[in-house]
Length: 167
Image (cartoon, rainbow, N blue to C red; front, side):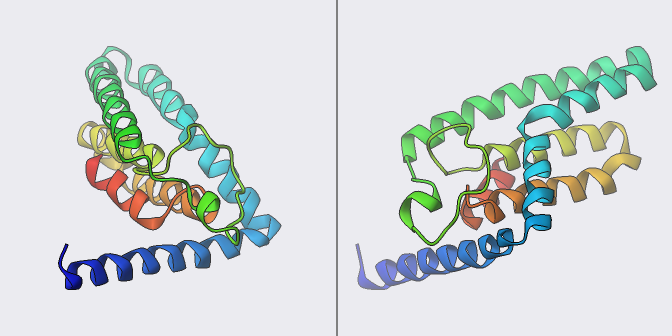
């Protein structure tokens, strides 16, 4: 590999780690840690299941099509991110850097890409295409879910960015 490419990759890895450290330090404050633990827990799937139930309650049979798309693409997203995680096998930040404090629950072993972010983007895009008025709230929630994963020491910013792009 050419020296310039190695240097660029090294620089990006350092930047990724430094950003992870910076965000993770904010979890030293109990209020921030609790807030982002709740957000991350919602991103485990709870919020998306609740959203689908709410759509069914408030929009009846009209919600079947968007729910079907959410389920199909959510499942497809799961297959993609699990395959990538095992193929790439990137360790989580707290395993590589002892300064990074893990503050959340781990659902699997590897870091890249962020499945929480991938699913948040998938559900936000699908739901917003059927219910555009929900877009601002879902966009904020998606952003907070991605941010929570870095603040809690579970992902690097690049994991979240790639999760969002794949989603």
